[in-house]
Amino acid sequence: MRKKFWVLLLSAVCSIFFVFVSQAQPPSTNPDPVGIILLRPQRQREFEPIGSGIYLGRGVVLTNWHIATNTALLLLQGVDVKSEDQLLTYQIDRSSNSQINASICLIKPSPNSPSTDGLQYRISPTNTEGCIPYNLTKWQSFRPSQPTPSPLIPTVPLKQLLFLDRNLELAVVKLDPKELDAIDLSPPCLEVRPVKQGEKLTIKSHAYGRYPAVTAIATVQDDKPMLRIDPDPRVPVKNRYAAMSIVATLPPGQGDLVGPGSSGGPVFNREGRLVGLVWTGQDLPDGTKEVWITPASVWLPKLEQAKIPDKDLNKVLDASCPVRL
Image 1 (cartoon, rainbow, N blue to C red):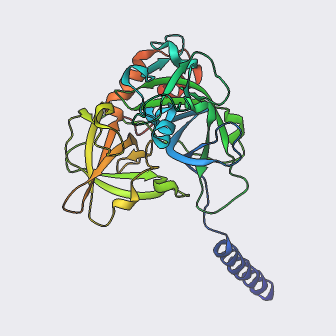
Image 2: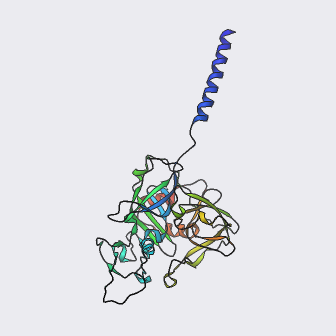
Image 3: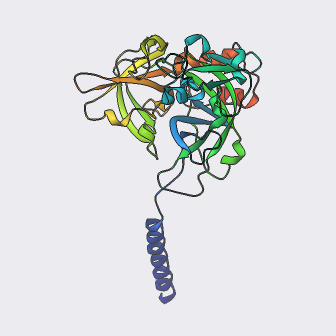
């Protein structure tokens, strides 16, 4: 009887101990496949936040066309780039724009030349020192979002551009996946089905350079993707272009959860599947904010049809996902 008593007592003490230990464990701080895109031009020591992206595994990162090209940096520097001089599309082994390795070089104003609006530039076929590469990913890195600061979260350079399309506002870029082996990332499933009007979507991004990512809930206003011209007032009207978009709205008071830095931020449906990327937006007079999303239902089939010769990208696109229907 006494032996049975001590066994029961020991079991109770162990149970209490394990309860305390489990309660003392810190909350989960797993990194998020959502990440911030950082820019560091040559000879510059510090990274600057420039946009957002999403890690799909096997080294594959999705972001916006304008984040992966010179457009992001030229916009900040005030260079008025002509449409015919923009890098519009690119696929591995099927480049439709030979300027993929070219650069834009700023021209110092001459006292003898008349003043013009915007900075002048010239196209250089090579990566001339001090110029801005068309393929801006050469200067960029990806850092997964982390709820709490940690030295384990790496800042990984972007290595290779696989796909680029301005009409889709989409860029597919690769990094070295081994540099992310030390952390546990869970890439999302890709959803090819269109979103529906009235559907609630979750947007995660590094709005205004915030780190870690912030979350916003938007409501779909139209479920038919169409080409829409960028309403961003920072872009000269003559240089604005159209990209496939669906529009969702944020309620009043939530507008600061999506803004500059949100470009390339992933958009999820209620099942957590990736349904698109943020690319632009605008404030409305009633205090709400439109968020323009380039939808996966448009660009995912095009990526699959492109048959890009990269085994990692193809495995990501072909991956069996229990929730992808």
